[in-house]
Image 1 (cartoon, one colour):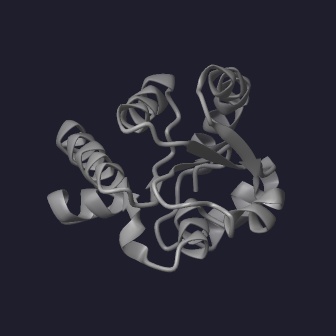
Image 2 (cartoon, rainbow, N blue to C red):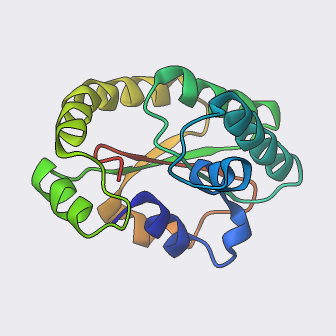
Length: 165
C-alpha cells in the first residue's frame, strides 16, 4: 500500500488530505515533476496551517524523510496546540520493490534500495522526536485501524513510510 492509498482509507473526506504530489501536479502540471520544490512545500505548509487553524483533521501526505521537513509540520501543529499522530508504514524492502512494479510512475530500483537504507536511521529519530512532542503518538500500520475511529478533529496526521512509494 502506498502512502496516498492509506491516507484515503483513513479519512472520509479527501479534502482532509494535503498531498505534495497533488500540489506538484497543480503547480508543475505533473505530479512526478520535482521542480519548484520551494513553492510546492510553501503551499503544502500553508494548506496544513489553514486546516489546523480551522480545527480540521489533516493528513500530511508526503514522505517527510528529512528531519527538518517533520519539524516544520510539528511547528504548525504546536502553533494551534494540535495533537500529532505519526503513522508509520514499516514495510520491508522486497514489498517496496513489488509495489513499485505495480505503479504507473515507477521509481528506479537503485533509488528505492538507497533510500530504504538511509531511512532506517530516520525511524529511530522519529521515535526520539515523538518523545519531545506533547500529545504526539506513533502508530504502526497494524494498530492503525483500531485507533483511527477515536481520533478527534483537529489532529495533524503524518504518514511516514520506510518505503516511500
